[in-house]
Amino acid sequence: MAKKIGIEQSLSDVEAALKEKGYDVVMMKSPADAQGCDCCVVTGLDNNVQGIADTVTQAPVITASGMTAEEICSEVESRIQ
Picture 1 (spheres, rainbow, N blue to C red):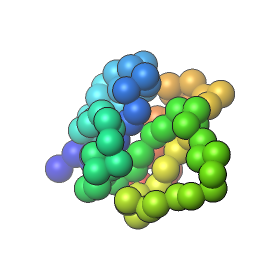
Picture 2 (picture 1 turned 90 degrees about the vertical axis):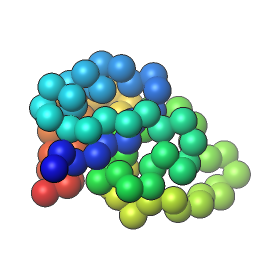
Picture 3 (picture 1 turned 180 degrees about the horizontal axis):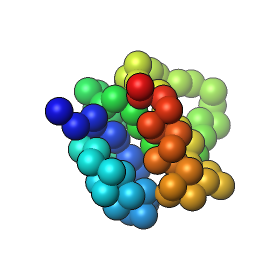
Picture 4 (picture 1 turned 180 degrees about the vertical axis):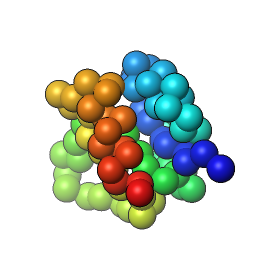
């Protein structure tokens, strides 16, 4: 069964790269979408200004800021093994 990776909507290049590697990619439109994911990739642009963080998943979260799609794929692979 393919690993399920949640990504933010603006990461279409990452979506294509992950699908090419056989991952099941879902768009995270709300925090609930992260549930059941083996790993999540976020842009890092929505940093929590107030310092309040509600954990909705135990899966690793990768911040894509400054990384190429290939670097993100490598990071996903290393975190979900």
